[in-house]
Image 1 (cartoon, each protein chain N blue to C red):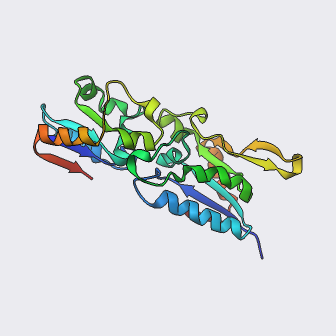
Image 2 (spheres, each protein chain N blue to C red; image 1 turned 90 degrees about the vertical axis):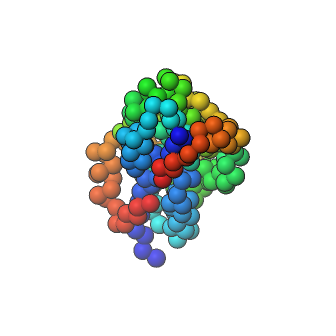
Image 3 (spheres, rainbow over the protein chains, first blue to last red; image 1 turned 180 degrees about the horizontal axis):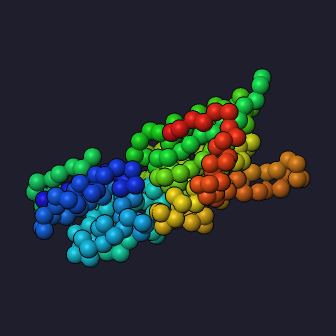
Length: 98
Length: 134
């Protein structure tokens, strides 16, 4: 499955709820304010293991809009909109954590 | 007209909600009425003034550039929460170099941003007549 998260973990618990229920083959794509979760910050440990496994993606346009391109945590994979579509096709069911 | 001390609390990032740009609009209105305006950035609001925002990829207006105009409206008190920056892995050097020209000091260019602790912010807030939260 593909899980999209569009909220900052500093403001909402969307990411935590996603992490609580994600299975071993799913991936997470951060979009909109969700890309704040891809930055190296006090909450980075929440996703560090998944990132190491190559299962954390972030939408490049949203990262650039927030000026955090140089601040990303390790092993975050950036995708453009075409890459977003590829993730949807590859992972089937999508869950949107709004 | 009587002058009041207005503080605008900015707690949200720029593009996920409409709060940030709406706050900036209201700030400029208050300045037009020649009020004593301060801005505070805390929580995800600190992302509003991060340097290097590029919005071409999301098709939204890059209003971060407007912050550079605040100095010309005599808005030169921008307080940024130290704790909120640190929590997000940011420091003052990641913020836009916002300045104003000090008319009392031969128009010397001075920084508008002041990084403050929550304790300092508490004291600054208590001096205000009006606090508006966005």
